[in-house]
Image 1 (cartoon, rainbow, N blue to C red):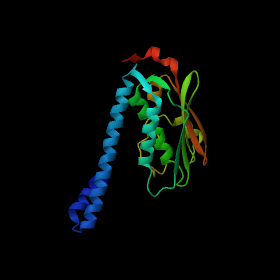
Image 2: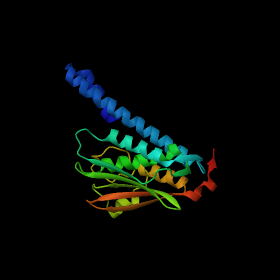
Image 3: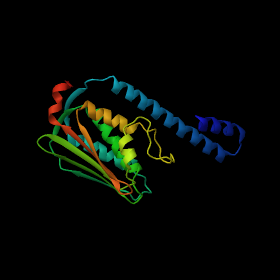
Image 4: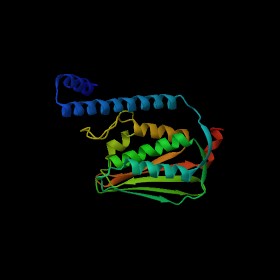
Length: 213
């Protein structure tokens, strides 16, 4: 809010059109951040009020195609980051909430892109076995230390002390809640200054405690 107030004040004081454009851009950017924060808080409230979720049959490759399109769109034109999708799923179906699962996986992909080196790699690997669908998202980025791993699902916790990365520290807490509602698990393998892999495992036998539409 302070950035918006300052930019609004300066906008009223300067006459140069280039300066006007700069301050307007700041205001728009900060407004979008506030809108994102409000949307995330509303989502957290709604998720916390759920004990079960409405589910239906999901064609899992459809979610992966959405993730791939999303990741390509998020990638900067100037970035040399390589994003790869290794999809071993062709006709795999899962009983779950497609919108929520896409939301959770999208947030992990966001983090992978955000915390990767400029010339690094992000790999999304989807596979399955007789018990579960497994989607692993790997980045070759900054990795995490032990304290960050222990606290990463806390609301408003941010691993970047300098606050150079955008975000409010809500993403992974939302991810955890969504996967918990599917009675799934998240396994994290990370090494500082090497990278992290988040493996989401969604068991086929969870549906008995969900509400199917």
